[in-house]
Length: 468
Image 1 (tube, rainbow, N blue to C red):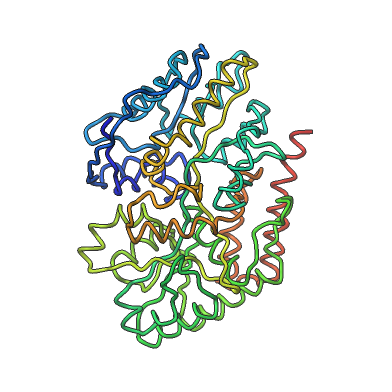
Image 2 (cartoon, rainbow, N blue to C red):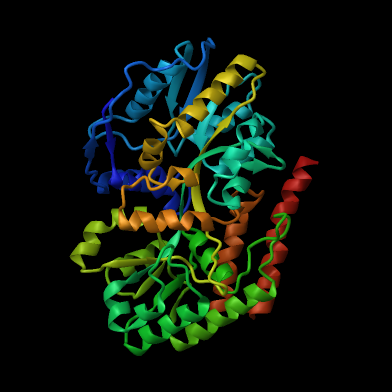
């Protein structure tokens, strides 16, 4: 089988939707598909003369998936997935897999409608993200797939954060395929012209400290370059500001049990107080009237020296404009007091719905294992998902691309996946309101964080009462 390896696959619509502020953003998905030009590098792969049959189990299962995998140029959605199933059937000839492609606009509602319909026939396997998968687990309709997480698998994962995102309580309910961290970006001309790049680690994962970040801000300002924006006019891109603020002094959004919000901690209050100090000096700009998209646009136009909201899909979708404006991007993780950040990220993975049929459940496990672990297809699936391996042993899947290697090096810094907690969407509104209250000096850091924690914690309590 001829397989096309695509570095430009990193601009997949699914990833782009997540970058622009949430899964289900069909407008962003369509825009990404229009903007991205995929350049394919073909690489012949020699097939073995005979493929060994792994199992003769006979059954039919369904696999539902969003358009996460990029297709070969000119091919419609689902073409690559069908090719995968042909390879799967070489090893499992008697397992018929019926494929259904979902879209980000109607797909979640379609699955939810089946959950609410008595006798609704859910898929056997679904490729999705942890937030929605966690909601299905809480509804009691997912199979416990902890048996797939052997010692070899868990010890090979790039971070505990990835594993925690796959669990519901003590049970594993999602098998991860690939992920990508959110980062920040700097204008190379400005950081080199100001000498600020001397304070930026450019080795490996490029992790750095809050003290060095402050020195960078000072040098950029002293050289007359415009600062970046702390935007907070809405929830889009809010994951970037959470990563930025909570990492500054090694704080966290929630406690370890994810049972309460902790923005009122000493570490987080120190970070918010420091941001107010920087803002008073002009080292960071008040973005209470700006969205994440506004911050990205002004950076791409060359107006700002740095941007808090960045990712590879952002870079690829804006590549033409960046070139036109003469902006060369230097990617950095969010700084932290100890130089060891805890990053937010997007994650792709599979879940299996419980249906009481032992053969279908086993066949579903065979399919998930094949798609994530088979030597012939697993790496290509990661590339086509527009993200990076969650398994250390998979190594460099982008053949030495320097920019990709930075993102790969950052995967071990993937932190707690907060998006799956109950009430998360409502909390996001309180988050940007808290930011605006502080930077506009409507309330003190103490009062604003106290209020945020009070109302954010109520979103968790609402879910608990509903379950009772």
